[in-house]
Amino acid sequence: MGLIKTIGRKPGVQRILGVVAAGYLRLVQRTNRFTVEPEGAYARLDATGPFIAAMWHGQHIMISFMRRPQDKVATIISRSPDGNINTMALTRLGVRVMRASGARGRAVRDARAKGGAEGLRAMVKALKGGETVAFSADVPKVSRICDAGIIMLARFSGRPIVPVAVVTSRHVRFNSWDRACLGLPFGRGAMVFGDPIHVPREVTPEEVDALRQRVQAELNRVHDRAYTVVGRPDRVGAFPATLTESQGSPA
Image (cartoon, rainbow, N blue to C red):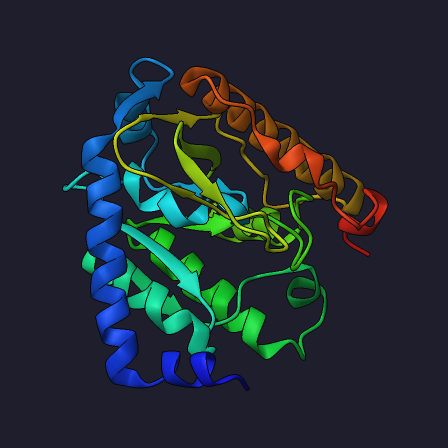
């Protein structure tokens, strides 16, 4: 482990970085002029009740911007040391963080995948308790290919999936697997909510795959629209996923 990474994992350093990260995100939110689409989106979501806010992993850094002061929002972050700073920052921004593995394809097929099963139960409990859950939909380590885990979360919770995109005109794109995007202050922003996608309790594997592809298409649509609103291209398309479409579907 490198020296910088070792220092960055010290609890005191992580607490400072968490405070700095939260403060920076507040600055970005307050200094960008945000457009929310569609018109009346929040009124529609209030009528919908708790929902699963689906996001692409590379856009997760700014997902807290969708939260209004009265909204109860939770998310899940792994127990790895690298997740501590995100946890501290999001907590300061009013998002409740659950520490566990996400509900991914293997977790919903293999009872031995205890971490994923634990995360799935925690998110279902949060949704049934009235919290909206923000959840990245990607296959692990593969950008913008939707995994079946989010479909299972909707199935077991009975709550709809609402694809969400939060982008800013001025931003930094990281050279990570998810092409993570961090907004910069003093620009234009867009929050675009997609159409709710409902998952029935009883579904066949073929229906799960069709729903997975529908979530993927709607996430891509809202991201395309959000970048159009701020007048910037979404450059993630220049870095295609390395997993084939068929590999993103459940076994």
